[in-house]
Each structure stands twice: as structure tokens, then as C-alpha cells.
Image (tube, rainbow, N blue to C red):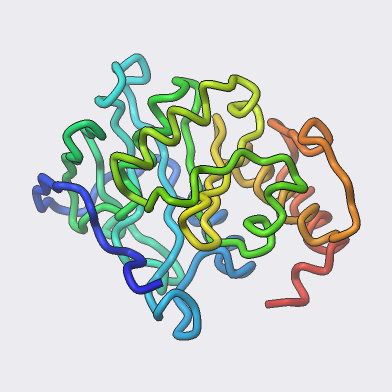
Length: 245
């Protein structure tokens, strides 16, 4: 994957001091879990050695119109960092897939997936958190798990991907899955939800079930929106995921 992490949109970026990030500890707690499971990070043997994975969270006003729904997002190529402080995030204030444009402020440039994040936030105003991870297990099992999949010919971080997200979610049931797979982005998986815990838990449930190669499932068997955080430990232990890290 030679172009992992490359910004493909027109970026209007203004450098600023580190941001005040609400709920930073909560985001970092989940980011640690994702790194431990190999879903975030940087590895010389994966994706050409580039960092992978990003995380975002909506900011008020929550009644903002489409393309103007502000969110914080992890900075470009920060996957190698164990912890992200406030200087590892940017604020995206405006985005427009039709014009291939993103407007951002912060001490670091926003993730190359910012346009895709914005497109997901446009789909439903109740979506407030997005995790973009790289999971070979979920990616390979997308069909078995009945997960929505973007067209394999569509590259990440492009207006075409934004349109593809819109197409996927014309089916209302797809919004309820909380997870979709990026067919043209090797191992790329997007999880989303109303809270950080919602998003993390639905992703962990999908990862747990993808590790059972003989299991036949409907997405209704996997769908969760409110699960106590301690259940993640149970999911990881009972599926042997922790042993791989």
C-alpha cells in the first residue's frame, strides 16, 4: 500500500496552538486498546511502514448543517505515538466532497481520512464518534458478517469515497450496523456510534466474531449500542485476541 496516509483532498490548513480537547482521556483509553490489538499503529511490515488508524469526535454545535459539522480528528501520521496529547489533534470545521476540500485548524494537519469522516457525520446527526482502523480479520470476513462494503474500485480519502459512503447509507439498516468495510482500502474498517464506548464496543464485537471462522451470523446478533466497558475484557479474553499482541 504505497499511498497509505497521503492527503488526497485540497486542504485549507491554519496552524494553531494545541487545542482544548473535550474527553481526551476517553479517546486515548480506546486508542490504547486499539493499538494493543494492532488496529492502530505503525509497523515496518504493514502498509509500507506508514502509520495507520485515526479517530474523531463531533464538536458542538450539534445542529450544524451538513458539510459544516465540526469535529476533532487525530493528526496525519500519528499512528506510531503511544498516546496522543492535545497537539496530536486538529479541528475540521468545514468539508465538501463535491469540491474535494477540507478546512482545518490545529497544531498538526488532520488525518488523510478527514473527508471520509465528514461524509459519515453527514449521514446521520446522531453519529458523534468514528474509529478508522485496519483489521485484516474484519475486512476478510465482511461478507460473512453481513457488513456493508464500499466499492473496491474507490480509493480512500477521495470525493468518490464520500459518495460511496452516501450510497451505502441509503439503506437505513446499514446505519444500524455501526461498522462498514472499505473495499478498496486494504484492511480498512470504519466504526461509528453516538459515544466513544458505543463505537469501541461495536468494533470489538465485530472483531471477536470475525475470529470465529466457523460462525454464521446475522448483523442483528452483533449489534450493540450500550455495553459496559468491562465487557471488552471479556470479548478479548474469550476470543484469544490478547494472545496475538
